[in-house]
Image (tube, rainbow, N blue to C red; front, side, top):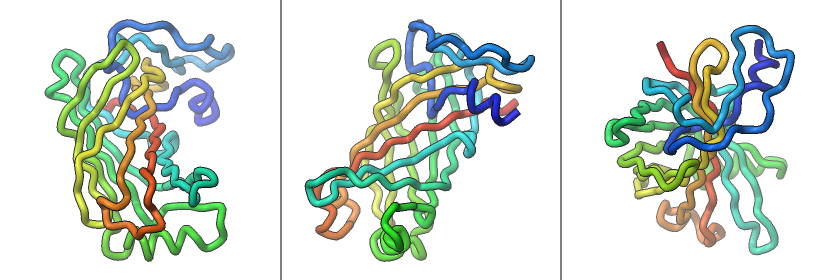
Length: 210
């Protein structure tokens, strides 16, 4: 079913920080029974405890390359859990971790240098985000405040959430969205080569645990 899941399930981190919205693009035809596309209708984002689908997730860091471009690094290993309560956002929570040694780069050998020398992955193998508050902004956008820990340093970080989709999924309900946050590398003790703010982009899917 995996190939159908890729076609049918939108990306996610949290969905329904919203009121009813427009539908997504037309759902592909020919899906097998029990496989459903997502939509922007937040009513489809049912309350419950969710776990991130690690096979449908991406964590990216966009870093200024000395003013010429944005170098994009990907972390290949991440885990997250979500408690979603659309009736009372104060009861919602998000916890996520990233394996710092799982960073990748197009520059040969550079990923190992970043994880070892800059992120100190041997000493701090995990970066983490723990939510402290959820806010609705408009029907398809919201924000999550939290504490972000990197290389042993913890600072506040706000993630801006854009709803991608929610629905019945394929076996269990799913939530889908993109999250974007901006961190100050100097606040986390990174070397002076990292002066400009670093943009974190997370696309993933969460599946409700029954």
